[in-house]
Length: 143
Image 1 (spheres, helix red, strand yellow):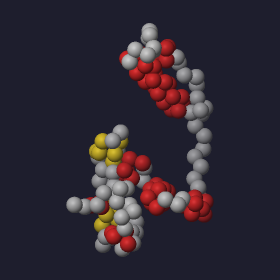
Image 2 (image 1 turned 90 degrees about the vertical axis):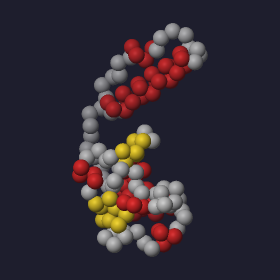
Image 3 (image 1 turned 60 degrees about the vertical axis):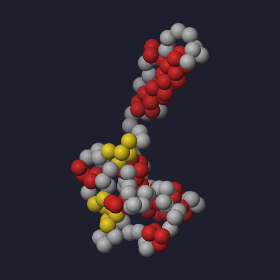
Image 4 (image 1 turned 135 degrees about the vertical axis):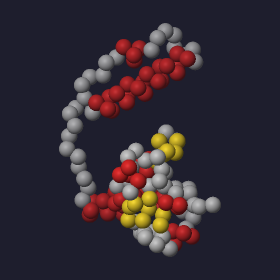
């Protein structure tokens, strides 16, 4: 496992013990605080799917909202927080662009991490997107 994964697992376990102690389910102290994670694996090379592989992935996804989210991540390169922060106000119908105006991290909406993430991204939504109700829960519509 990578270092970040090991530290995240340690944090999760520590939280479990902390809660159990707080609720009186476990006496004593948090044993995870004494644990030092082992060295993780070195970072490997990043693998990028080919266009054909990515199209095959999209082809097996049956849920429309999931397909839209995966397409935004794969074709446009948006991160999870950027996708969660999308609103219809950020979509320019004339230019066919979306503007990442916010991101959502830990349930809280805020500015994107960097200035570069605020750039307009070319994307095409079809007219049916404006009347379809399938994505309403994924991308909030303007009031």
